[in-house]
Amino acid sequence: MAPGRANFFKLKRRGATGGLRTVGALSPTIRLGQIVEILLVAALIGLIPAYIAQKKGRSFFPWWIYGALLFIVALPHAILIKPNLPQMERAALDSGYKKCPRCAEMVKPNAKICRFCGHNFDLQSRIGGIEGIR
Image 1 (cartoon, rainbow, N blue to C red):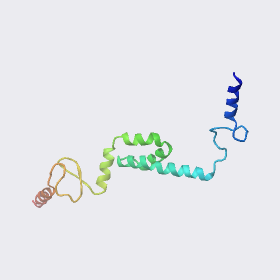
Image 2: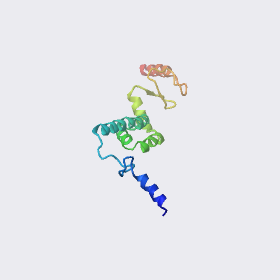
Image 3: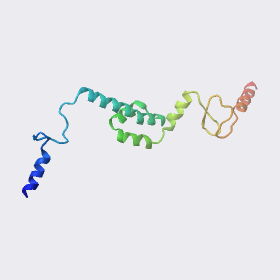
Image 4: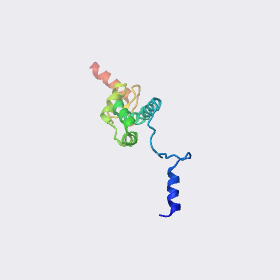
């Protein structure tokens, strides 16, 4: 190897003061504040896939943990999973929505006409009241 080339590699490894230094090595002293910051950011980022999964009828807490630990995997997973329709329907019924008898879509509790098929709930309640009298 040529003498000039050997000096080039030595200079590359020496710091400005002339002592050897390690490039890219992690600092052996990580402050407690840095750990807390990393955990806080992970917890906040984990909320994104958890929220998406909850809107699709999945449980929030396990998805929050999953998102905090493996955000890069959890986010696309939460976006690509199919909605849990029975769970979403149960939640809608619990919150006061009603199911249209004609098209089986969920409609608001005060709806007089189904916005999907045009079924008249007022007419159905009047007919039900008349049949109940007989």
